[in-house]
Amino acid sequence: MLDNLIERKKSIGSLRLVNVARISPEKNLLFALELLQKVKENVELDIYGPIYNEAYWEECKTVMAILPHNIKVNYKGSLESEKVTTEIINYDFMFMPTRGENFGHIILQSLSVGCPVIISDQTPWKKLIDKNVGWDIPLDRQDLFIQTIENCAEMKQEEYNEMTVAAFDFAKKYIDNPEIVEQNRHLFI
Image (cartoon, rainbow, N blue to C red; front, top):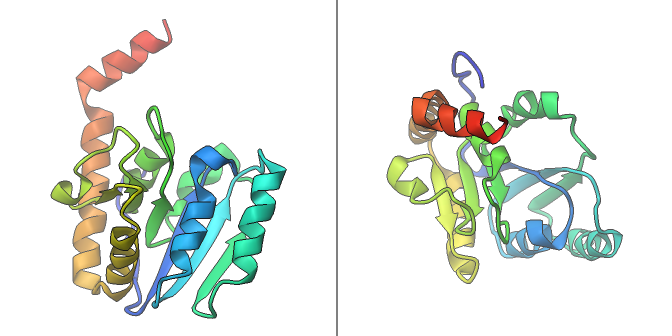
């Protein structure tokens, strides 16, 4: 986690998304790419993570090859764990419509650098919109994912700044919560 929030500039009419996860069906990258096919705004998605399932990656590459001109996707390979937060800070939002997470450490890491998230509702991170730190959307609501991405692309700087501050503050309170620290300590005893 950063000690201080680094202010970022977000361009209206475009969106820089990041996905940091192993490439496997449970992380649902193919679904993410299929959603992007329907987005009308300019979106760039950078993907970080090891390829765990080669056949699944081939399916993803097939969709990547037919994405419309307004969608750019880059596979950046694996990312060393100590470089994750310094890389995430370069993006507007984390985009990870996962099929399920026990915890979702990458989600907390994203929030900890003030990067709001667009995730599925299949994680412990719930009611994110109420906290102004992102969205947790049901996987059967593709329309909401698409609408959210398009709204984020059109988001003005002031609203984005409010979200980044809220994300940073939320993560800091979570990480500094003595009850959570104690629960984590017991995991390693």
